[in-house]
Length: 166
Image (tube, rainbow, N blue to C red; front, top):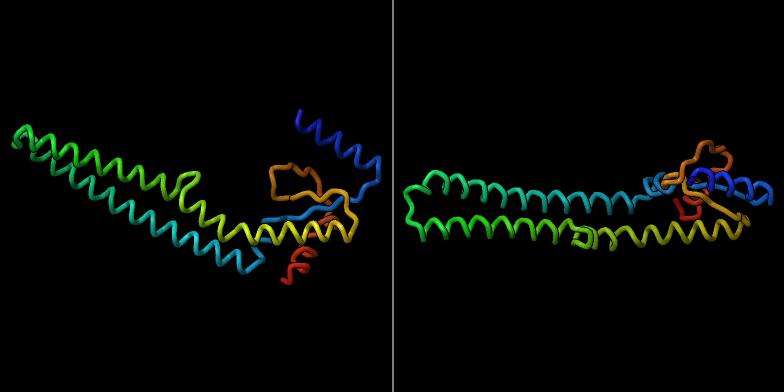
């Protein structure tokens, strides 16, 4: 159904002789040094947080092994406190993981802060390019849209990079 809809759009577009082009936003992003710097910063931050969480998991594992080794020798009250301590630390790890890597977590917010301005510049350049070139439709080759064939003549990614000054 989705493909039929897309074919109908292309058919109606070709009937009206509209100007069509496409860009590859992934290619554009990879050629913007600020994006690569932002991506590197995000990767470093992610690795740092993953290491912190890994250390916490190792500590929980160590506590659990110690608990297993001594659980038969511990009084009931002490055993209960050790179990609660392990559970509390596991919950803290889950909470921290969600806080850092969740859908609205710190990594997402940092990504928005670093990447959003670059994406806005790209979309602004595409809109300006479309207005100047009087294009009716500009597709993004790197999106979920399936392009069964694309004429390299219609690829305007380099023109957008030029408009951005790269």
